[in-house]
Length: 58
Image (cartoon, rainbow, N blue to C red; front, side, top):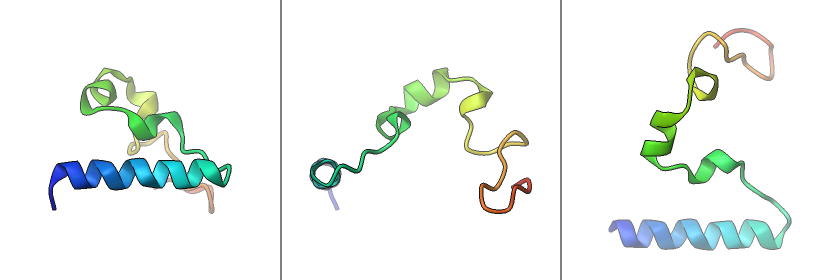
């Protein structure tokens, strides 16, 4: 699958979700460079992240 098709599907999905008042978090659109600029508080892994269902560490 070409990247242009992937980007098209992402845009269409965002439009569909917005039409139903469902909005994705801001980090959804971050580029790899933006992720690299963020500090450890934005890491999806690591000791500071807890499982939101059980409260236990991941």
